[in-house]
Length: 209
Ligand SMILES: N[C@@H](CCC(=O)N[C@@H](CS)C(=O)NCC(=O)O)C(=O)O
Image (cartoon, rainbow, N blue to C red; front, side, top):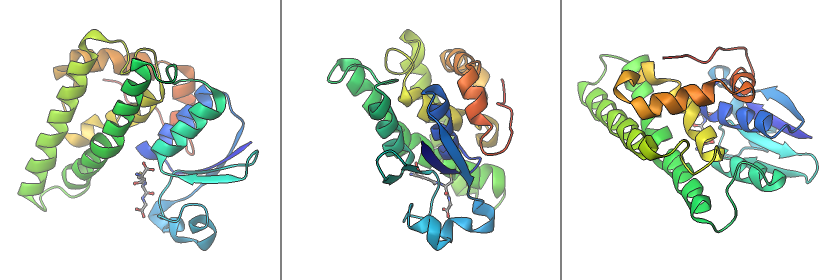
């Protein structure tokens, strides 16, 4: 049994999607970050960087923060959704997971902040993060031109990237400009585990282009 501490954001949804895909039993503990619940001492004991998502694996007693680390842990625990260790696709999976963690997520987070939540506050920041979002979507679209998924078969790298793409409207992205990405997005959005995991902790439908 896994305890999942989460909220309805792209980083939280990556993990609920993975738990659903891997058919693991889990308890959901909502952490309302708009009410500063991430600063509660009981949560900080599990996630010292005061951010969701975090898990506690009751089987092993291990607590983990950072969605990328959690996805790797769950894939390792179940032996699923990761290509064969050491293969080219395995490293491709790690590579695109790192791409999401180091670039796509943080940059789109800033795009959401300036373009969606605080429009008009800084032309410079809107242009900088809007342009960077456009560039990153284009890189992903090119990568998907000759591949069904980012690393061979569907993997934790796709699960990490997908929930960020689901916010394309907040980032002023016209998804119709990215045919390969749109095809990939529709394929993932139709998966029953993704539909269920996306609605954790509160019901929410996946936006469809
Ligand atoms: N690198 C972290 C980022 C996690 C993160 O930014 N979580 C946000 C919600 S998406 C959060 O908990 N924010 C609360 C805060 O910053 O106080 C991960 O991938 O897990």
